[in-house]
Image 1: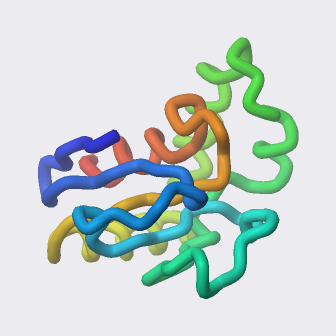
Image 2: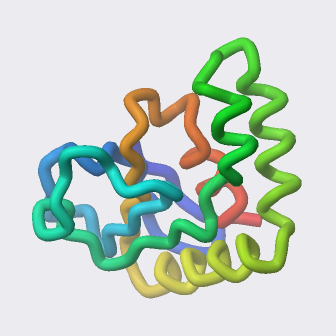
Length: 124
């Protein structure tokens, strides 16, 4: 899944378990927790910005329940205003300004995860 940011080039969203692709560019894990069963070498990451991920409280409350998705997005957008998360988001914008970026997550359902919210926030 690829989106174009207003201020940057292509920003891709993929599972961290997917094979590395030549077009990935800078690969950034945006989960708070390290993916199960994946070694750091196998992940082939350029960065791990766990600071941009949703809080543990929000992540546990949401539980990837589609009925809670809309409220999850609203709550997470509010969390992204937190100084630590805002700084991590700015790091992502800086990376994207230099070339393609792939945001990686261990979630099975990327469209229902926090990753699209990050991509949208990157273009604000």
